[in-house]
Image (cartoon, rainbow, N blue to C red; front, side, top):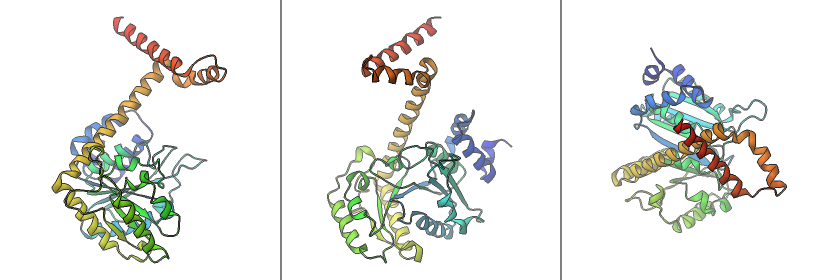
Length: 330
């Protein structure tokens, strides 16, 4: 049986092998993703992001339990910082979900960020397709930890859970528009800590100022939802989790009814295509004008003021186009 057929049947080893092929940019990875693509579109992709230490992993662990009680297959992509020694994932998040390690209906994979900005790994979008085609109905993506520039999660998820924690500077972090705009469902975790109610008030205030941006596939939420849900939880004590699951369900239902969720998914595809195009153009340029090899020399010439930045780059692009034209004529 070939790899594609095994993945469609939910073979865990085949899924793990496919993910490794994608992460390592092995030959055949792109054709594998294309072969699986017709089977995608059935999963709900939930991004879970927030500041480090907010309890994201424990929160996901509790949500997995609730989803499994419904009989849904669940997959988790836990993006960890890369080890400075091996380059691999440190696996901290995966260790917190060991209670599901023997459940055949749960697949958990740690992925190294490998220096990729945005809080997720570069291969995450393709890994989602593998898991989707394998029949996982709920796919959680847990990011490293959000900052104002780490908003790529919104380009990968149907619904983003933004997890905040009282007493850790989140009151100030919550005021940053770049962070607040990525959230759909807001989770104030560790609600038993002092300052939880104050943080909720801060979040409510910021959300009241939030303007919808439907063209970007995100906004204040689907029509019919008065505001982004704010749920108080204590994942460690397993409190508020049922309410969080209900908030997610309502948000999804209203999103499907209003067409907002379909719009978000089109936005995801658009961003994904742009990302693929940018990578392919970069690879093509690197092959034909050897960008990686010439970059140090270009940098030196700029440092010595022997060249001008835009003129240098424009000349390299013209050189690339001339060579491509010459190749076609020959």
